[in-house]
Each structure stands twice: as structure tokens, then as C-alpha cells.
Amino acid sequence: MELLRVEGLSVEIAGKRVLDGVDLEIPKGETHVLFGPNGSGKTTLIKSILGFPDCRILSGRIWLNGTDITSLPTNERVKLGLGVAFQNPPPIRGVKLGDVLQHLTRGVDEMKLTATVNIPAEFLGRDLNLGFSGGELKRSEVLQVLAQKPNFVIFDEPDSGVDVENLEVIGKAVSKFLEKRSGLLITHLGHILRYVKADKAHMLFNGRIVCSEKPGKILDQIMKKGYKWCEKCPKVKKRRQMR
Ligand SMILES: Nc1ncnc2c1ncn2[C@@H]1O[C@H](COP(=O)(O)OP(=O)(O)OP(=O)(O)O)[C@@H](O)[C@H]1O
Ligand SMILES: [Mg+2]
Image (cartoon, rainbow, N blue to C red; front, side, top):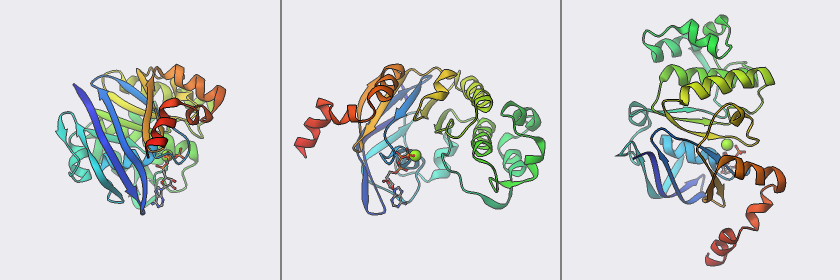
């Protein structure tokens, strides 16, 4: 059975149609990758799966582990086992990273967990994401997801802006976490795929998933030909003619 199923999802944000009939299925135990150019709607898809109110669903449905979550509030979706490490998490004054972790972990050794993502202990006393460097933000997001232990987890560009050593730290932590879980990984350059084994990759283009292939195959094409390769794809051309 699929852990995540998205069917015919069209979404508008700030009056603009960003997703236009997205179909996506991620079976239990698998990790998939989502590729797509800047502004193609990857983060919007994630926000829609989480139920952010600014993502207005025009049509389509979303299922998590067999439950239709399309109309559920975000907190209910999280209770059902959905977790997200955001691309650009906002700073939150007055809420300390340590408080968030304590709330999420319930008895798990916090210090051990912070060490796995190379976050120094003093960060627990800092306001969430306030003044965190780019790489620290990514590690803090991964840390919070590890603490939450969701069944289905989405990582939105966990490898962007991360140095080589920390890429290894994040990559290994994410890989171990995904061993017994299912997930969706967004990456532009595929650095994290050096550590994380992914089963399948999808290309989001013009508001739709236009192809699904082995991750290495899609990444190879992107690196060699860029997204111009998608422009030339017969499937994309045909769809444009149909509009
Ligand atoms: N709140 C908003 N107001 C106006 N436009 C928005 C808003 N949120 C998203 N958009 C637009 O929707 C489109 C998709 O944005 P999104 O963040 O989903 O792209 P992305 O695929 O994640 O890109 P990137 O690879 O750069 O992270 C963009 O053109 C973006 O400017
Ligand atoms: Mg994005």
C-alpha cells in the first residue's frame, strides 16, 4: 500500500495556479526524490500535503497511510505521522530549540540526538532558528524531524548550503532514519543521494509530475542537459498542445 498518495492535485497560491494535476504515489518503506526547476512548485506541494491554508486546493485528493487527509487541519496530519524538514524555516522568538525538542522527544536522550546532527548543546538554549547559519538551520530542521519520529517524512533541500563535513553528518542521519520509514526528498544537485538510497525520482514540471525514473537516471539528465531536457520531452510538448 502507498504511504502517501496524491491524486490530481491542483493548487493555487496567492491567486496563481502552481500545481496542475499532480499525481504521486510513495509505497510503504520507499524513499522517493522530487526534482524540478526553481519555482516549479516543489515546496508548494509539500505545504499542500501539510495543509497550509495559503495553498488553496482547487481539485484533487491526498491520502496518508490510507486516510484521506485533504481537508484535515495540519495538526491532525502531523498526528497521523507526517513530518517535514523545511527548506526555509522561520525564526521563532521566545521558543527555544530545547523546549521544542523536549515537547517532541518524550523521554528520548536529547543530547545524544543533538550529537547525531552535530548541533552543540548550547543551541538548546537559543531561540528557534534565530541567527542560525544556513547549515545550522538545516541541521536543526533534521534534528526536529528525528525527534518527532514521523512515519512519513519530507526533507525539502536538506543538502543546500551545507558544507562537506556536515553533508556527511546530515546524509548519514537522514539515511539511518529512512531505513525503516518512507519519505520524500527534494534536492537540486543530488548531493544527499551520496548517502541516502532512494528508490525512485519524479520530475515536477509545469505544475505536474512529467516523469518518474531511477534517481540516478533523472539526475544524470539534469546535470548533462538541465531542464531544457524537459522542455523537449514529447510528453510535455503534447500536454502543452492539449491546453
Ligand atoms: N505566498 C506566495 N505568494 C506569491 N507567490 C508564491 C507564494 N508562494 C509561492 N509562490 C510562487 O509559487 C511558485 C512555486 O514556488 P515554490 O516555492 O513551490 O517553488 P520550488 O519548486 O520549491 O522552488 P525552489 O527550487 O526555488 O525551492 C513560485 O513562482 C513562487 O514565487
Ligand atoms: Mg522550494
